[in-house]
Length: 293
Image (cartoon, rainbow, N blue to C red; front, top):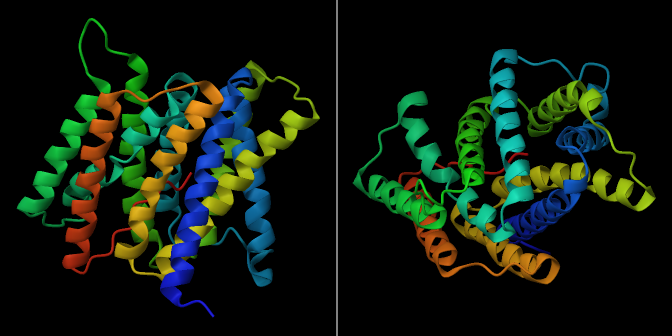
């Protein structure tokens, strides 16, 4: 019989794998309009959550005590999701994943203004180290700057507010309802874009597009279950396996070889995130910083 920490470790591992597979399919789906891919992510996520929600909530699943905060969470999540999808289609997989690790940095900054949290010198140092890592990866400059580097940073900004909103929502709302509202929002927004482009997929492509919603949905649930069962300090470092997966998949599928500056910058961003996590744990503030796509 596995302990709670062991189960949490297993859930986190499965979550990282699910998110990594979803990223691969999204990168593969560049032949299909972005709105269409969003539709599959949202619609099949909705189906998944209806399957797992408590039976006594089927008729009144929409009931919530905090509709305004759900709206803000969904809007920021949509911005993050669209940004990461665009980034995955236009940048090497390892580069996108590396920059996405910077989300805890922005969450730390937002927590000062939105949650009135006090941030000490160690976390400010971590924020500085993380930004240096981002600068190394993106190598900004007027002559060679790639505009698509902006999108993973937009993803981090959106995701950072999502983390704050979920911390507030989770005090009164079940995890499945938070995720369900987000999937519904994705579906509704994607429907608006469908008249501007829809490519009829063949059967095999249809299955892959459906899997974007399935893997995105279960990844969020497994992530939440991991944080519920295990100590954050134990399971959070597992998220950095996503970079290993991204390097491997990028190389074998798209012949992408990460540059030295990408690996160096990713190392600084990861170190920054670990410092932030450990300071939160030391201060007995468990902060859930996840992808919630």
